[in-house]
Image (cartoon, rainbow, N blue to C red; front, side, top):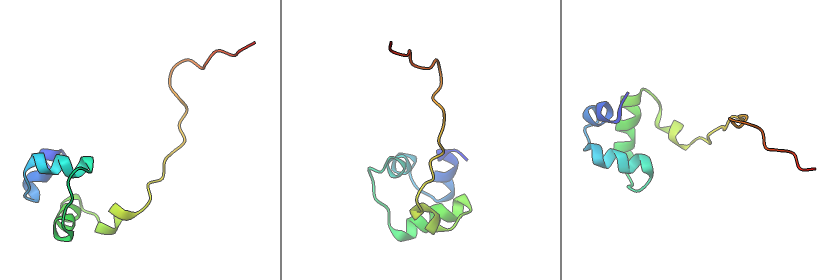
Length: 66
């Protein structure tokens, strides 16, 4: 789903939705519930810690020092 699709479902101006995603604009609990409903998830999902997968860096490995 694009930001535009989500902004139409909520409804919310796309520029405001972008600010929410960037963390530069706060939302009410009511708006948070609308976003969750539009995304098909429970609002509590926004507050769970994110598990970061350990990934190998791309590209060449660093040169070994002698």
